[in-house]
Amino acid sequence: MKVVLQPALVLHTRAWRDTSLLVELFTRDHGRVAVVAKGAKRSGKRSGSGMSALLQPFTPILCSWSGRSDLKNLTACESRLAAPRLVGKALYCGLYLNEILARLLQPEDANEVLFTLYEQVLQQLAQGAELDLCLREFEYRLLIELGYGFELDVDGESGEPIQSGEHYQFHPDYGLTRAAPAGHARASRYGGDDLLRWSAGEFDLPARRCAKRLMREALRQHLGDRPLKSRELFHVH
Amino acid sequence: MSFSPLIENLVDGLRCLPGVGPKSAQRMALHLLERDREGATALAESLVAAMTGVRHCQQCRNFSEETLCSICRDQRRDNKTLCVVESPSDVMAVEQSGSYRGQYFVLMGHLSPIDGIGPEEIGLDQLQSRVADEDVTEVILATNPTVEGEATAYYVGELLRADGVTVTRIAHGVPLGGELEFVDGNTLAHALSGRREVGIT
View 1 (cartoon, chains in turn orange, yellow):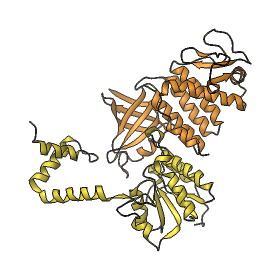
View 2: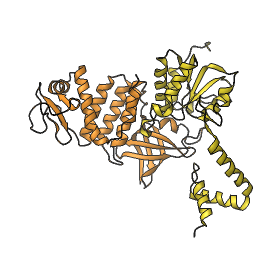
View 3: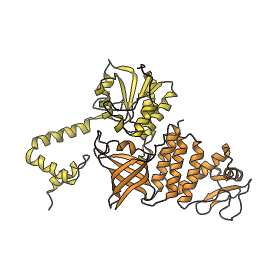
View 4: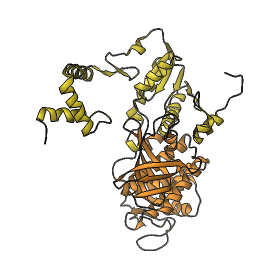
């Protein structure tokens, strides 16, 4: 199978053999694809030079590949847009996004909406938008795109609107459901007023904390028990 | 057809070398058996000796068969400057440039969450205590100009700046003898944003 000039974003690159790179791509029409870039680490004015600069994470590229097996051969690759320049904490956020995408995306399962969302969130991070808001928005829409979406202002079990003053818990099948008054541990309860403020676009500190816990719990269902390594980066600072 | 067990073992063993597949491993094994038994025996001995003898230097984490490597033991080197690099081959590269006389710290990798490598795996607590114990005044971050290298540099920088040390990052841009036409856009953008006033060296 041959694919030509496919828009893609680089998720991860690792060295392979002496001069090649093994690259995980998120492509627009083919989803997650793993390719080998032969000779990409070779320097000089021959073919392959400059390729390793393009194959850095977050870089928007156009790439062509061929091959039948799971691992394709990258035959050509060129720059599509300027790479978003992520610095400092925005860079950690980018690495976090790449880690969850690498774990959640199924190989060759195309999702153009998610591709666009990912490209947009990288631009937002690079332009200095509020990092946690970018991440929460992306996480929420990622869940929807993967088919695990839920409403933030509706009780998923009874279908009633979320009430301020009530407490809710997260259920993997229904989304948010009314929590028994005392039964649930505090850490997995979400205040109705926090949820309502969040879904109305009022991002104050308690609403942000609530959204962060909620997204973390919702994603954990799909990420498995192995902890995310990129979260460790945020701990020190 | 298959070889006798001893040869089979040798072929399998050679495949642990990077870039060596079944075919090249077989060629190597046959070459050693046919033509160079002496060299092969010497290789086997030095492999065993190196695998049992080589450890990590306690100070810089580079490979060394002694507690402290030759660079860390060298009294003439500047103990106040510390250069942080990703791998032992980076130490060799910086040494060969002949322009650095300070000490090193080898991370043996870079932060790469997807590969499961976080701050603990690259020995940052050891770096932090070394900087504090030895009164280091400047730490030069010479990790690779890759996304993971930059993330590592930023993380180490934030960690050490909190301890009041001057932290610098190596410059990157157009290679010597290169031509702008052949330099990729990202590198050129870096070179432009890191430009300097003429006359200031």
